[in-house]
Length: 181
Image (cartoon, rainbow, N blue to C red; front, side, top):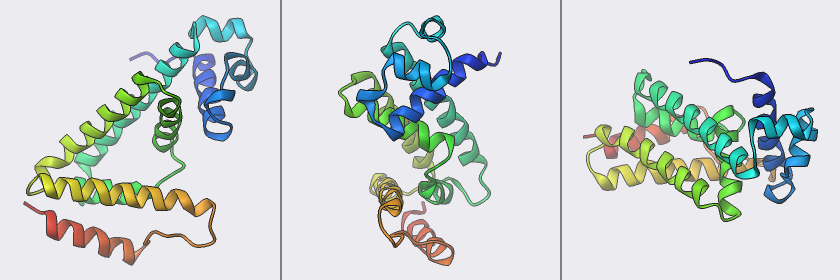
């Protein structure tokens, strides 16, 4: 697959950054072009509207999710451990894309909401063969959500609410023990 033009990637990077730092309302085409260092015409060459820009970000997220799922299946410690362990990573390209698309979804975009639901289903489908039943799958998904949410709070509080090191390993072992097929 051919690599997208660098200007297009800069525009997506700028849009994502504005969504993450300033919110969806400030992520206008003008603000995005300015942050990307391109003219508005340059932005419009790649994305004819804010909806197309959002669709580009959703496509980026989906590519990152696909790579994540491949890595999950290849993980030495298995998909459940991988999924839980990576739930506390906040500043990598996938986490940034997920958060940015979440901001678009929160503004009322049905396409972004549907894209996030589809991601959740893809992860669940990848984990399902590695757990005993649907309740076990729910447990893995909900523990992951809690790890992610609590880790997101770490920037606003003095203490991290998530286990790490041996504590995280113990949580993962416990979840694996009660969910294993």
